[in-house]
Amino acid sequence: MRDGVRLATDVYHPDAPGPFPVILIRTPYSTNVESIVQDGIYFAQRGYAVIVQDVRGRFDSEGEWTPFLHEAEDGYDAQEWCGTQPWSTGKVGTSGGSYLALTQWLAAPLRNRHLAAMAPRVGFSNLYHNWVYTGGAFQLGFNLRWGAVQMHTRTNRLQYLAVPPELHYSTLFQHLPLITGMRTPAGIAPPTRSGSAIRPSAPTGTASATSSAPTATSRCRPTGSAAGTTSSSKGP
Image 1 (cartoon, rainbow, N blue to C red):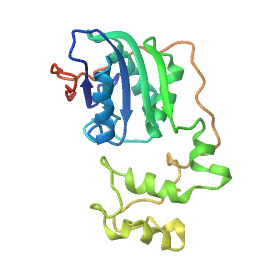
Image 2: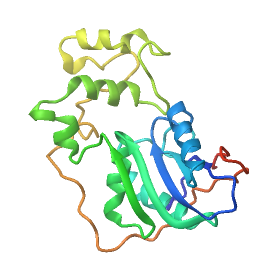
Image 3: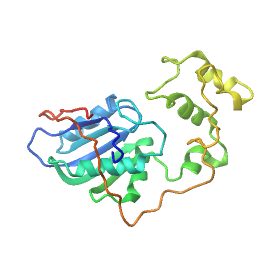
Image 4: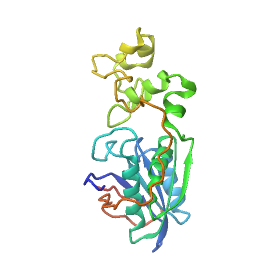
C-alpha cells in the first residue's frame, strides 16, 4: 500500500500465457475459506485472473484493523496493482458481498483508471441507516456480535470457538445494564464508546466521487504464481 503496509494476496490464474482480465476480492474474513477458494478456481478456469486479499490488519495482512477506515485508499491501491501486472489486461472488476461489497463502494469514488466493473452483493449505501441504526434504533445484537466479539482481533472469534464464556452471546445479552455488558475480564470496551466505528456520530451517505485519483504506490506484491488453473501465491 502507499504507506508501505503489505497486504496478503492470493493469485489464481488460468493455465495460459495471458494477459487476463482481473477480478479483485478484498475480505476481512480470510482468503483461505472454502467459498473464496471456490470463486478463485471457478473464475480462473473461465479466463480470469482472480486476486483475493486480506484487508489491512486482518489475518496475514500487515497493519492495524480498523473497520472501514482504510478501505477506500487500500482498495484503490489494490486495483492499481492488479491493473499493472504483466499478466493483466488492465481491466479490473471487483466482487463480493456484505463487508466485501463495502470495500468496493468505498474505493469506487476514487475512480481508479483500471476499474471497469463492480459486483457488490448484499451491501449497503449508508452505514448509519443501513447497518448501525436500521430504522432509527441502534442494532445492538449485530453490532455487539460483529464489532466487539467476532471482529475485535486479527482473526475471527466466533461463539464457543476459542471464546471465553464471558463473551458468549447468551452471557452478554442477559447482562444488565447493557451499556456495561462488554466490561469483561477480557478488557473489551462497550461498542457504544465514543468514536467507535460502529457508532457514527451523524448520518452520512456514500462518499462523493472525486475529480482526480491519488497516486498509487502499492507494495501489495505476491511472490509469484505457479502455472495451472488453481494456482495461488501468498503476497508478502
